[in-house]
Image (cartoon, rainbow, N blue to C red; front, side, top):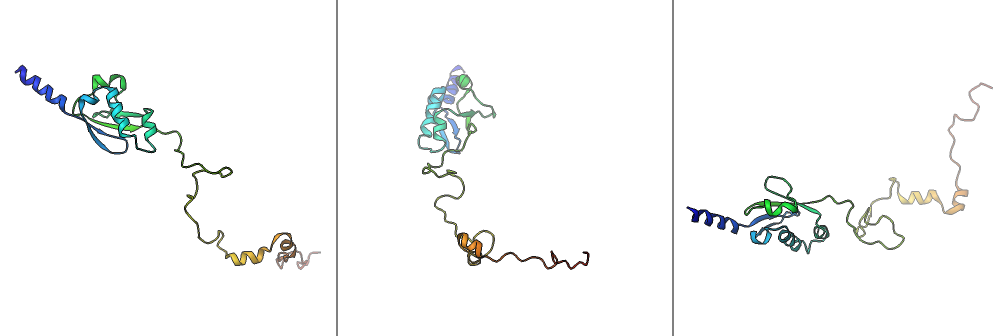
Length: 165
């Protein structure tokens, strides 16, 4: 009887930890490699070496590991709590700021915001008027401003046709 209990315990220790990372990838880690926090942390860091945005945050330890009961497992109690064949899920801590998109040349404002640099907007000009009419009415510089006709007045204003003098 004692031998069968020991055999069952040994078999259970051979079962892996089933790990789902923060980007949804699934891994099976041998329990003897991830039974300590240091071992688990090393495996997670290896898995994120080539992940651009989250990789640096993982390397800094900005994540939680969630056990099968939905509770966070703290590093200090990992070895006392974790068991073979558990499903562990990784969640990232909230990021305070957006990751840098790219460096903009000096003098450019709004780095990484608005229309991406490889998009060319060829839609009609704003305001719905055709650009030809806009150019004709605008003239050019001060001469165009001075040469323009004054705006028309309403026929009822300022002509004294009301009979009250």
